[in-house]
Image 1 (cartoon, rainbow, N blue to C red):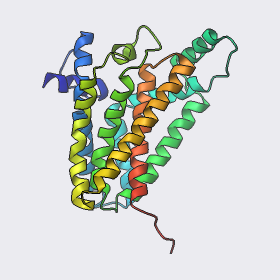
Image 2: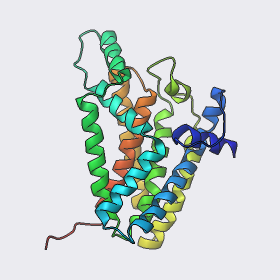
Image 3: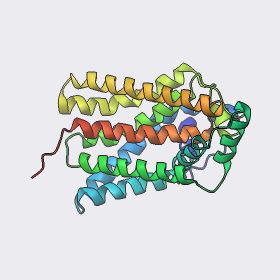
Image 4: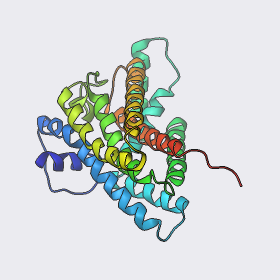
Amino acid sequence: MRGLLVAMGLVWRVGVGVGVKAEEELRGAVGWMGVVGLMEGAMLLALARLCTLFFPPFLSSALILTFITALGGGFHQDGLSDTFDGLAVRPHPDPEEDRHLRLAAMKDPHPGTAGNLSLILTTVLALAALTSLLPSPLSAPALLGAPIAARWATVLAMWRTTPARPSGLGSIFVGRIPLSDLFLSGLPLSVPGLLLVLERGWPSLLALGAGLFGLGLVVRLLCSLFTRRIGGLTGDTLGAVHQISFVITLLACAAATGPTPLP
């Protein structure tokens, strides 16, 4: 149970009363990330049910995104912005200097154009997906599953990859996560999977499996991109993976609801 509290304190900006000093304890909490995602999904689902009693889908979606952003204190959004600022740096002919410039841009506290655009676009896409999902029967498995999938994708990015820096938060996890943690962090996906089966039947599990395979492929492609451009992964790139995976999952679920005909 302490591992769960450590995991919550690592990604949420709310006090959980756990002081952590050892890197081993931080790494030991990674297997609980899927449970953290399940808790996030349960909160989003409850909030959605409450908001839709009083507000239209668009406003309800905005409130849901505001809540999940506030829960994490913008931690992952900051990583997304910093990552895209680093990727947008003009290439330098010297590979080592190019890597240094990109890492320096990622540490700059002032967001650049690419970082701001990444935040705007992911927010718009998530808002559009949620607005489409809320009136749909798929809203429950989507709201419950998207945070879990994003946490699992982040753990996947940590597994068998290389840290870009020898120090920093990312170096504690990147390339140092066992396969068992990847498996454990994915187990809570069985909960939204069950909801999906109840809604769409057993064949929907094939769609879920294909979706997870596709998400995993996207994550590994992102890791390959980060390795080529900046020499590995950092805490910022893990935040970027989380945000991108969250949005992709919502978009996939929204697409599964089918098109809405124009009046």
